[in-house]
Length: 240
Image 1 (cartoon, rainbow, N blue to C red):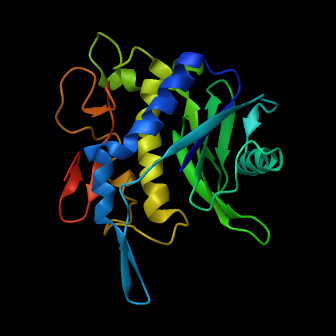
Image 2 (cartoon, rainbow, N blue to C red):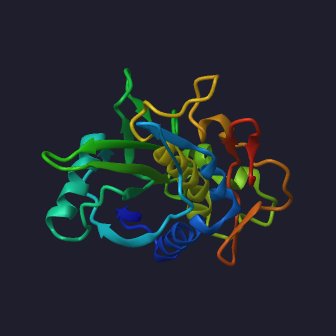
């Protein structure tokens, strides 16, 4: 189940396109690549199901100029307490933030910086006496000025612009798909890594395969440019 949080004054067109992508990603041949992953618990093999359901989104007023991991967790907990989102052990809560806000990934030493070291990340935390909550954090580079180019799709698109003429959303969809795949297969950092030590999204980072123009896949009725996904025995692919 997918829940989206928009931190800061992000445009309605960007929010609508991200919600649309979240609602349709689960029905794509790209997402079907994740069904090759499985876990075995007590001798029972369970594969990733081809089911990703978008639930709803919430706007949150930005009060920070530097977004830390602890801030993200507090925002999610506040939304739970306010009844904006259910506490869903099968949920993935994605916080999208404006690119004129800085962000740190503090789960490594030294901490990593948005636009310098990452375009998005995923994590998890456990609620006291409750379930593990999975989350993702993704910045909108269209608000970051020249620095945003590090995470923008325009450098992979033809001169006509990005797939949906929305630099922010068109740049974030691939990061969203990347982080969603890793959250599903390795949310706790102890599950899937390939032989090179990469998560399945990292193994094909910025690798879009063969395509022309500004898109390489369809989700719903719209076209998007999304990185390939690592499939064991196949490598980086867009479908099975």
